[in-house]
Amino acid sequence: MTLPFSQACENNKEPILCVLKRHFSASGTVLEIGGGTGQHALHFATQMPHLQWQSSDLPDNVDMLNLRIRSAALPNLPPAVALDVTQSPWPIPVLDYAFSANTLHIMPASANAHFFSGITNILRPGGVLCVYGPFKYGGDFTTGSNARFDLWLKGNNPLSGVRDFETINRLAAEAGLVLIEDNAMPANNQLLVWVKRAD
Image 1: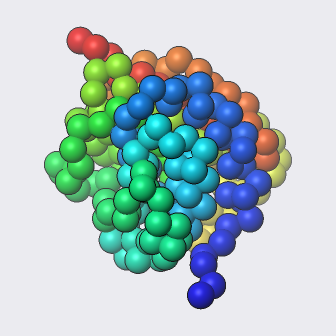
Image 2 (image 1 turned 180 degrees about the vertical axis):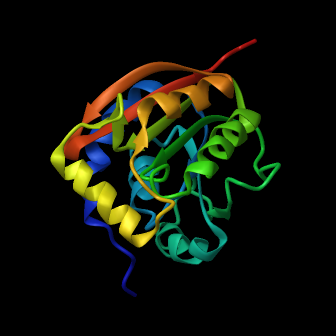
């Protein structure tokens, strides 16, 4: 059986893991939003066995995601669940951590607010959210390649596009999350880390 494969996931999984290990250090459950091919889920669940890694994706994508997850048969990597971030409430129990890679620029901008409000509703106080992907700062692209990527995204779907860091961080703050890190990553991406306020 040929499993779905993303070269980008192979390229970025180790740099992402280095950051996740610092912030997902205690035992707990992680919700991954937009699990895609399952490569991240498999790698991170293998490298962080103290975590229960619950992956998810849009209903139409879950079967593909579960091909890799079921073939791995890891005790801390259960089958992925269907999740549309715009649904309310999310069919997810309260958990300790959340992670998402390369999703905010794919979903419509209007869904970004649902993404953060949904996470806040299922993340325990003091829980951590890590988000990987490209961002603009002060309205400017960090590189020419990200500007070209934005044009490519909009050509495929006018509602997609590289998001403004300031807008994303405002949505996170409005949802009760506090930014604690902005990590520069390979291939002109960032890994943003927020903590849910305890109040």
